[in-house]
Amino acid sequence: MTQLNLSQITDKLNQEFAGEGRRLIFWYDEKADFAEDIDTLDLANAKVFHLQKDNQFFTKYFLEWEDTETNYLIYAPFAKPPVRENHLADTIHYSKEFFADRASLLALDLGIEEQYKPVLQEYMKFFQSKERVQKFYDLGLVHYDRKNIETGLLSVLSRAKTASFEEVARIVLSEEDLEENKCLAEFDRASGNSVKKPSDTETASRLFQNWRRHCFLHTWIV
Image (cartoon, rainbow, N blue to C red; front, side, top):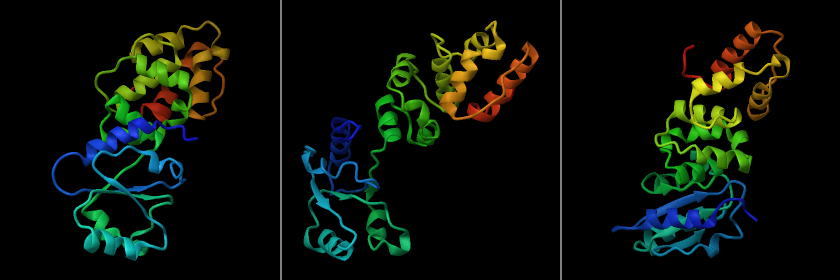
């Protein structure tokens, strides 16, 4: 069973197919996560066309000569081929591609612009936890960019009540036992990094600044 929300996907696709003019949407599902569910999608204004690796020429003929009016979701249960091996490359060029990875659905649900989806992909280990995802939602961020997304991640990991880097820093550096700093340990687990335990306040502060600069807050200057 797929972990992603089929209703979200259906809603998004129906939005894409709405309006006048014929529309073709290509969906390359590299891991075939939706192969068993694709025909259950309730598309209001389009049909599903099953693309196979060995039927590209027929697909091109069908879409461009045999049926030139119907909207189609062209579903491929494999990775998108390189341009030189993809006989549908020119058709895709004037059509549209659909993505249903977890980062795409998070971006859709939170209203995050497409240009910031790579930021979500960068921190997918964080979003693997349903509890962390819910807490990130609960922050109620209105505007999303790299800085705000990363501040939100840090706020969740440090258990701050609001998305504020100042509050994150206060929580991290106020722990009495700097050698067993729970927030730093949580940061490491979420980012997949390994750091040395600080032995005093100065080392803890320097460690946190370095971690902030190199692990999450790439665009900030301390």
